Image (tube, rainbow, N blue to C red; front, top):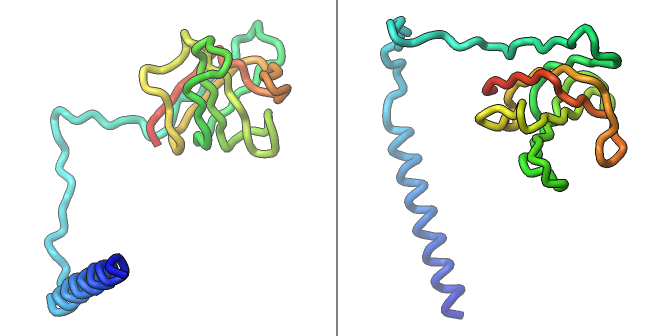
Length: 145
């Protein structure tokens, strides 16, 4: 019973605080503030907005190229060989509109890509550990979302 009383008192207090904040925000006039303008900086270098396109080596048969946004990242490979697995919403190597990429340790970037980042990869299509088709990356690039 005490728990219920304490919970009701806390809930009522929270509602009162939210109502007070809402009233204060409603009482303040809404005017457009000064518009911030971007000023170029001598030290800032513009980062490329897109990820570089990967290219297939001429001597690799069955090579595929994919470039898209990351929808899944497996940082720790279950078989323990240290490679990175990334799934992108692009191409159709693994399934309709998606492609899995196997990135070997020596191609793994310093910062693993995250969901929403852009990546590109090129390499032969090989079966994965579950029998799925995936690109075994010979070239891999990643850029933040």
